Length: 125
Image 1 (tube, rainbow, N blue to C red):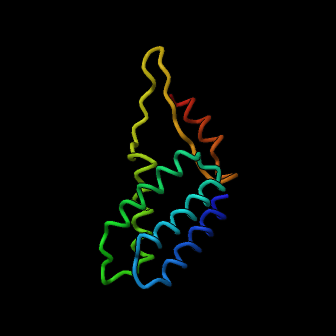
Image 2 (cartoon, helix red, strand yellow):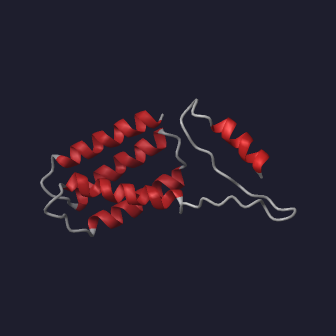
């Protein structure tokens, strides 16, 4: 699934790379395709919509640097938004408060050890 998402995003950015400059129309088309790719990868509709809107807002207002192509500029904006979407990196693992609940997200490719890691994490906490 992640491979398909990656391939679709690369195709979108390749198409943007063939453009001379970023226009609002180019970005709108690209964000529509990004939203479709995210939805095909089972990302929640609201998350996909909000994500693409934030990327569109940032990309439209940016000047394209002379040293990078328009596609590279959009890739940077998408990357920054994906990092922000995942949240800050916090290496601490505090146990939940007395009688409370803690939620931990374990994400990874099939066969990468998510279940084993979750079991070890539960035992540790």
